[in-house]
Length: 390
Image 1: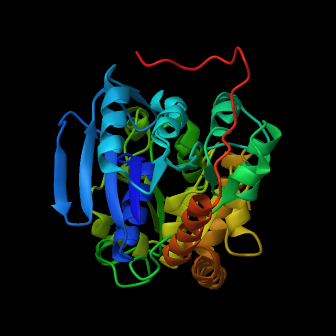
Image 2: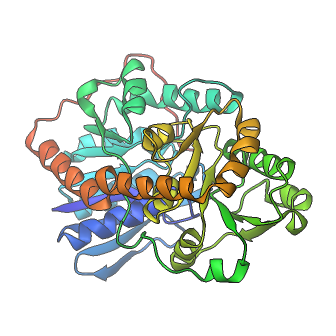
Image 3: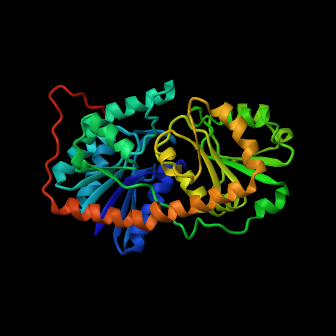
């Protein structure tokens, strides 16, 4: 099967990891993949007989959203017409092109599947979660025009259906992790730190990730004597937070780590992974930590609480992050047998529900089903505004 994959290769974020892992797995199973993404180099780049890249022009892109160049729709249409894939899969990049893809694919008679990534907090406890909910409301009328929409949890599925996307088009396929690559093993990090317990956060240093609540709880609990907190990632709040929470508190700022092997080494050398987010979808970083046999502590934002239920980890409320962490961090530090039980359960939960192999098998079945069925895309109601390209 020939899949035209529209996604991201930079800057680094969960969408980038998702696209890389899924397309590599599809290639391993013998499929042909054309990867269309926003970059300045407008060329077809054949990397192998079964893989090629197609560049789309843009004006701006970030970890959150992308602004295409005015000619991007034309470039995309011409590329798809030349490629003639069996199916188009858009790992949605929060770009105006997302809203135009159904029209493009309808004109070319191409089946169209989307993966919808935006994080959310189903309880709408804060301004950040309310903003994310608006993203769902904006996208829902247009997602109704895709043949299938992939989400990562039943919670997301229910939300989109309540917003008007037909249930028959919203499919739950959870994120998946390569459980052989992400697995327990030796680590250079543990040998270098020489402390009783290593805590780690991996992700963006941004308001929605709520890292400051973790840092504040760490300082208030006096955790720096026999433990270390390793912060991996970059973002708009990094410099300001690093100035107030430094090595004197046992906090180590690694910054952005490009090497996947190094990120795996950090996870293997950690005892506890902490994710204090106010909004999430289904965190790949959380699944990667679980697969590496790390005790995991996360908020109930998005589907993360669902992943850790029944003692696969510790779940805290988005409303009480700092206060609950202040209590839980010392408990996790001082009870290694509890950590071991949770870590073993976390690894098993990934093997049972969240492997990349299972993810790809479900995705192949969805492609086959979509290709077999006649397409009856929804039509936007008269007067529904369509976001325009600049």
